[in-house]
Length: 189
Image (cartoon, rainbow, N blue to C red; front, side, top):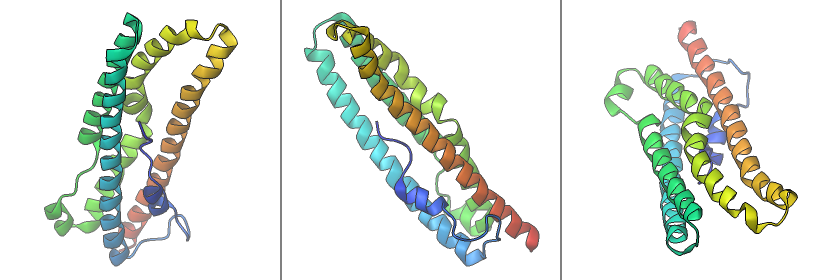
């Protein structure tokens, strides 16, 4: 699957000025709208990636020999479906009524929800894929002829998952900075 990070989200979270400089209300409204668009775009990409995972590993489950490869493929499909379900339930959703009531509180709640989701990406995003991936790769271990060849092969998804985890932790930290800016703006009024 693709990383839950998004370059447009990353650029939204990046700051040019002081880390805790208060945000004017117009800037909060603009950022909230851009945040909504970026989250929707990221989620659509994740759902499309889930469809590809289902198609590819579904094909593997049908054509690859060996029970462990088939079970591993089915577990990866299950992991992808769990990730899609988690994403749909963990993602902050736009609420026009909430935004109209208090745009800062609305935007802050969305940021807090997204920060929590990104900070815990290891549990809900990486974790569901591990059993299927481990079984799938373990069943391929005999194909490599040496432990070193298999270790090199296994290092690739391990590094990808580590990268996903690190990037999401960094994005969560940037969101915490945005939350602190909003809090500073609220205290300054």
